[in-house]
Length: 513
Image (cartoon, rainbow, N blue to C red):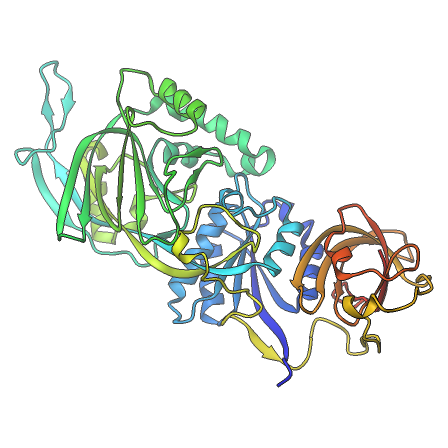
C-alpha cells in the first residue's frame, strides 16, 4: 500500500522573554510547515502559565509539545505533559531560548533556534526517566542553647516536638528532567531579577550570586536510600553546602556534578558537597568550578530510585534551574503550620525523590552520540515522523492547493543518467541557513533559508522542501545529487524554482546548487 503523507500536530509553547524569542518565529514556523507539521502557537503570559498551556496541549492530544525558552520553560512543559495524565504522552521537544539552555547543550541541540528547529524535525523519539518530588513530612524542633549561648537545634529524639505528615499538593511542579538542587543554587536562582536576566543573560546570575553566596552556610542533612535488591535502607547524616539530585550529567552548563548519570537507567544520582575543610563558601565554590567535577574528599555520592532527604525548611529548592517555593508543595493546613513556626531553621522538611523510569518520550537529535542514554537503550529509537506520535493524512495542509510537484522522476538516482540541463533562470536566489535530512531514501531534505522580497527587497525567511521530484543541478548545468543538498553550507547561495506557499514553504521543482 502506498504510504500516506505524515502530518504532526504540534503545540509550540513560547516564553517570549520580553519579545526576544519572537524575532525568529517566522523562520521556525516555515521549517515546521516544510516538514508537514501543523503548528499551533501559545504564549506564556504569567508565572506557571507554560505548565497550564502544556497540560492543556497534552489533554488535547498534540503529537508534539515544544517549549521555546530556557530550562525553566522545558521544566514547565514536562510538568504539563505529565500532569495531562494521558496514556499516550506527547513527545516533548525544546527550542533553546533561555539563559543557560543546559538541556540543549546536554543533548547537542544547536543554540540557534532556527537550526534547532531543523534538528527537531529530523530528531528521534527516545524514552527518558523523569524525576518526581514531593514533601512527605515537617519535623518541628525545640530550641536549645549551646555552651556559648547560641541558639541551635540537634536532630535527636529529645528535641523533636512534632512530626507532621504532609498531604500531597498535586498542582505543584513535581517533576524534573535535568536535576534538582538544595542549597546555594536555589538561593541564587531565587534572587535573580527576571527582567535583568532577559536583558543581560548569565551576568544577572553572577550578580545574584555575589549577593547570596556570602549569606550561605552549611546545614544538617539526612539521606535515606532505599535498597530495592535486599529491601533495606542505607542512611547517611552530615553537613552540606549543596545537594544535587541528577537525572542527567551537566550542571550549570559547565560542571558535571553527577558525571555517571544516565537518563534511562531508572536511577537518580546524588552529589552532596560537604562542608569538608574549613574553607569559606566562596572558596569551596571557586575550587569546584576550577575542577569542573566534585571530588571524593569534598563530596558524597549516592544512587537510587527512591531517596528521602531531610534538611532545614530554610534551605531553598530548585528544579531544572528554576527556584520553587516550599509552600507550593503544602496543603493550606500544612502551610499554616509552617508559617506558625518561630524559625524555619527549627523546622525540618523531608523531601521524597523518586524516578519514574522511561516514562516520557523526548526529541533527541538523530546525530546525538553522547553518554546520556545507557547502552542497553541505544537501539530503542523512533523518528518523530514515523513514531506513534504521528497522524496520517492524505493531504499536505502546509502547502497551497495549486502547488504541484514537477512531472519528473529526476531524483538523485535518476539524475545521474540525465544530460545537463539549462540552468534555472526564473527561480529565487536564496541564502542557506541550515539543512535537515527528512528521508535519505526518498531524497527529502528541508533547507532553512533567507530570500529578498521581490517588491521591497526585504529579507524574509523561507523553508525549501527538496524531494524525489526535485530536479537538482550544479552551476555548470550538470546533474547534482541529494548528497549535494545534504552538504550545503550556511551562507551558500542557491537558486530555487517552485511556488511559495502562504507558510513561506517552497516545494522545489528545480534548483541550482
